Amino acid sequence: MSFSISTAVAAALLTALIAGCARTSPPPLTLPRPVKVEAISASAMQASETFVGTVRAHQRSDLGFESSGRISAILVDVGDRVRAGQVLARLDEAPALRRIDKAEADRLAAVASLAERTTQLRQNESLAKDQIVSPVTLESVQTQHRIAQSQLRAAEAASALARRELALSRITAPFDGVIVARNVQPYSDIGSGVAVFQIEAGQTLEVVAMLPEAVAARIAPGEPAQASISRPAQPAAVLPLKLERISSRNDSGSLVQAIFRVDGAAPALRSGAMVSLELPGEASKVPSVPAAALLLDTEPGRGKVFVLENSRLVGRSVQLGSGFLPDGRIPVTSGLNAGDQVVVAGAAFLNEGQAAVAHASTTLLHGAKP
Image (cartoon, rainbow, N blue to C red; front, side):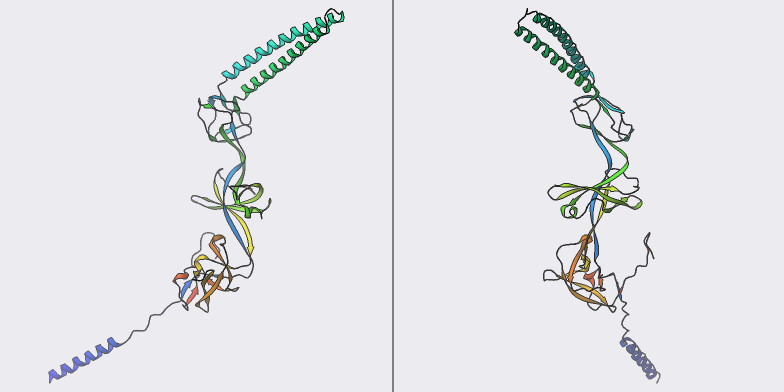
């Protein structure tokens, strides 16, 4: 009897266990996927274009010797502040001094020769009045006197050039400034016109950039721009600029040099620094989307984007425009309407009809507004 009861209890427990295993668990709750969206605007979009610019001093100069020779002294170095007229370097002056001595000797000889010819001319003119010498003889003496005068002028000019060469054997600062480069060493031979120093003046800076011809054609002096400056361990600084002048010549076939004046106080910058120059682009009424929002179609010029509608993702076929816009954007000529919430990131990982919600950032970057 006890065996039958035990068997019945075991059978009941086994039945309950089987029933518990057969019970299906409820499906897991699927949350809407957060997606980053961008609303298509009906107004014209003002695009911007970015180029590389170089900071340089507005007043600057390369300094060298006008004549060749051996450098005897370099009196300043990189970083030194100098005053206008200060001697910066000297050539060996011995050759110039010897040329001065020779030129002065030639001048004195010409003075003596002219004095002699002048005496002869006066004597012959007196004799000619008494008809003691012939007109031919007088004319010959007059010619010799004119030659002596020319020789004296040539000797005086040679003496002046020799003294000028001595003066030019020194490099002097043309204005108050700072030495930013030194290209030679003392006691080295150097040719005329070779830059020995580079000097820059003051705090006035400008930004020079090479722009495509199409961009240069639509801007004019006086138009505003801005430059972004990235500095280590410091927030990026924005430098307001104004176009000062633009070249009328193409370099490298398609680039035009443009020079921008720093508009207002400039941060502590060194000349030669590279900046990101931002110019306003052409306003366009054609909407555009980031390249990451597109799924390309097999048909050329067409693609697909996902639009957030009623908390669901809906695929939308779009016609693409030609070319690329700044910041990696692609124009869309048809398929999108003003106000459409286009998913702009991760399109390759989304599905048609998927539940989604517009992503809202929960963190604030430095300087952002809540």
